[in-house]
Length: 130
Image (cartoon, rainbow, N blue to C red; front, side):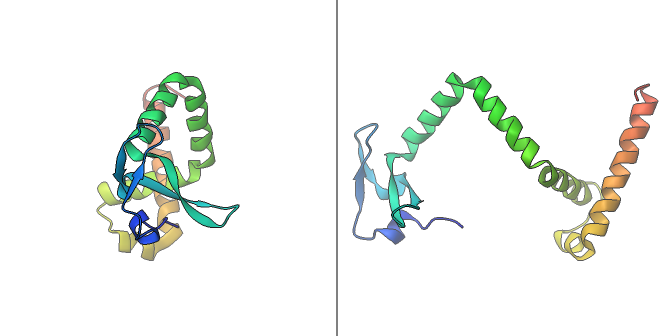
């Protein structure tokens, strides 16, 4: 579920101070999150620009950890990525629309997965791989 915008949640607040860069900015420059403990929506402590800089700095200083997290995420969502790839193949190479794919359902996806496996196996055999 997407969080409401700051303007919707706090119509009486127009500006906010960023705790990182000490700039007074419109509330639209701040993220909003739901605080589970209190049950309230809250502003992020820093503006979106500072949050992006902080995120980039973290990624630069923790490349190995970030790579491990990405690998774990990919592993968890491998089925979702496979479906995304298969649907992309059906749309781009075979000319199917979203409606057609939804109508034909899992049978179409499974058939395309099987065809992709066969094509991959033939390609590997042709290249002398197992």
